Image 1 (cartoon, rainbow, N blue to C red):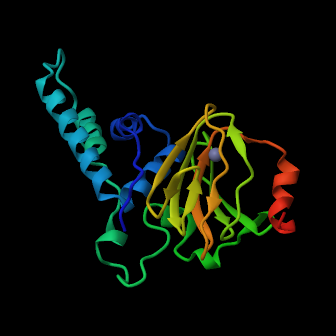
Image 2: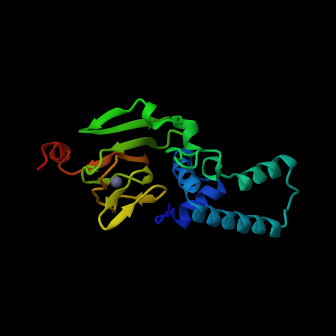
Length: 219
Ligand code: ZN
């Protein structure tokens, strides 16, 4: 597996500093669990952050409590157990930690809800209520209806793959979209594409009904 599409520096820094909300952080940490390169960048950010803190002359001595909080923040790491060997290596779990703690370990056992022809979703509850978090299951070879976004959309591929224009997104790949992007991701052939999607506003579909029915009609 080689992850080609990575989380942006900006988002990763927000994550490293602890200022990113839980819902968005779940997308970032799921990508981190599957992407050694992004984990290295995170470690570099954290080292830089630590060095900056060392240089600061505190005007008042920080309390033990404050230092403990800061240390916990800088040491926060995603759980890499699923990547590093506790799982059956021949068939890695579709959902890595920490996502698995939210949704459970078996994607086939989830109570998927119909979303459109052949497509399903599984809403995930997070504590911050900042964004909609869900797993999407798009049938092999079928498109998500063309849409733009009312806000930010983070997507992490968990199994299968999808095409977005010229780009191909595979397991571990991260896509960030916003109001400026109109797209129509298409699930790859061969197997359903399962993604984690986090959005803070409803998608704006174009010709929603037509495009939803199109794959079923095969036109
Ligand atoms: Zn989108």
